[in-house]
Image 1 (cartoon, helix red, strand yellow):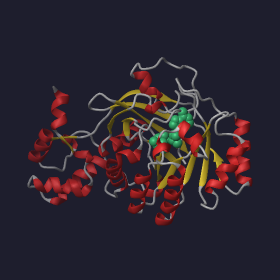
Image 2: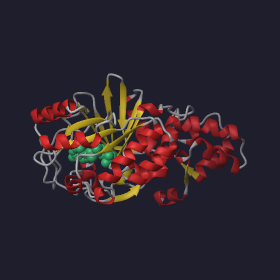
Image 3: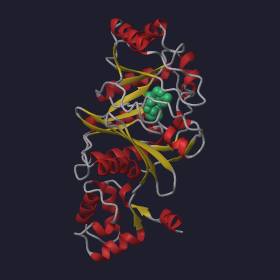
Image 4: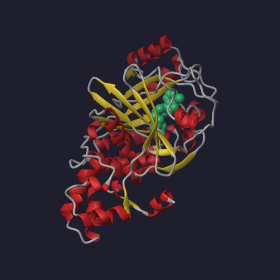
Length: 364
Ligand code: SAH
């Protein structure tokens, strides 16, 4: 079968330029060909070896026989009145992921998934309800951006790793993905235009700090104490706040980059004035930024969203207590629901929720 054979093949768009150069040389070709092929894959974003018109015929034949290129198929596409486009993409092995393109005044942002499903088990999140199926490869993650770019015919200037999956739970592939998309021979997205969001895997944060990347690290905090945080996020049992917050402080020291904290507001759980005070005490002095967003209720979750006025009140309290906080602008509110729901609907694992609204648009 076609797919079974493809599994055996090397996915060429997974390889960073140094790795691609090694491969090209290992099949007896000069190194400059690697650079040319890399440009075809990541700048022109072709999905067919025969489109590489400056390559010799015998090399194209060899690549066609031994290699593939990640090229997902758009299975569903929803466009919001504000221009936000949400894609359900089908990968070569049949698995589906979600990708969102958002339009901001500073340019288009693509929100990418990094895993098929997620193992982290956050109680409010649709992406994790059926667990983790597998990691995405570097080329698959990049192909999400290329697919959105080609579909809209528009330039993509910013990328956020805030779709399905936990990026630091797929560390090596995510690092190669960042190298692919920031490479000048590729789509060339500057690290400062990239945000990576984590639920708080401390060893991953420490490893990332040592890379000294200029990206923005977002940490999904969602609660100011262990009791509330553990009730929302099982990952807090392994890496409680007394480990997470020092890791965030060291990250800032090591990279010189400020962290931003995500805080999804749940009615009666983490949105009281006491919580605002606890939060301010926890992170004051870090110069960090807090992004507040009302939770997007998903099927099977006991949580409901804090209303707008209380979100504003919470923000005001944080500001008064010396913590920088913004309420995230919501895009795509008329299409689909929380991240991960399109995929779950498609898999027939849950019944459709026609009036769920409130796309998470976690771009900065
Ligand atoms: N695994 C990473 C990135 C993916 S989720 C992380 O946990 O950060 C991106 C952000 O959306 C996270 O802050 C996550 O906690 C939040 N999120 C997930 N489901 C949500 C929902 N239903 N409502 C509001 N925010 C949600």
